[in-house]
Length: 252
Image (tube, rainbow, N blue to C red; front, side, top):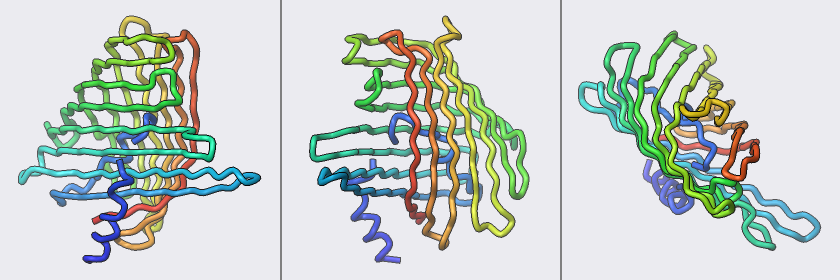
């Protein structure tokens, strides 16, 4: 066991979630376990006619539950860097902390704080606080589904547009997960929809599909596809990004 923690110690300086992060896949749905630590790390190197490009992406997630298992505290951080001989192509980070209180077997209250930065987007930095309800609308042995709705107050900074915006926004998400009977793989698909209260045409949309393949109790490989769309940036333009990740993960 000690060598696994040594390996995690080596990865910690690289861990830190990019601006496009699905919180649903970071929740650790383990009802009887009070403390869980997960780490994902991916590295890619390419050489194009002598020009080197390196990509580092790491995520650290921790979850702590109270003795009666009604209160859950979640923290996650991510750092992503894409660097080439010509300089940084992308530099982003994400920090999120969340409190969840189980009101019943199906319904929970949750609140959260979040900070994020992505140099490639028009809104380079976004900080927000929010609270709402979460419904476990289906809970079977191999299939689960969640529906959530929250109020968010956010502050958005854009150096490119020279603006700072203060917004009241709604956040609705729908998530389904499937674990194969053999437990050889699991898939999760989640959709987030976040419109402004004062202008429903100004919204953000995020969809994420994730495939996990465990190779051992503590080790897995994963594939993630993200699509993000912003209907109105501070420059009055539309913006979208898509990304595909393949990496490895550790659980302790």
